[in-house]
Image (tube, rainbow, N blue to C red):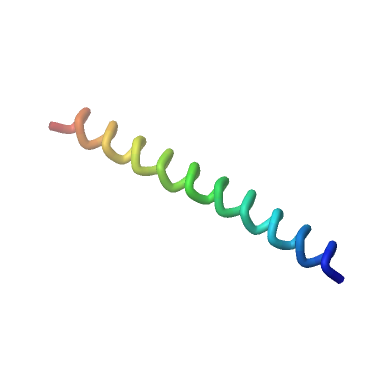
Length: 38
């Protein structure tokens, strides 16, 4: 039971990191596109 909770926690942490990376990547692309337009 504890192992399953640990694995779930680990999975959520990794998922959160990937989500942060994706959001920051999209923000970088958005800022890059804005600087190209101006």
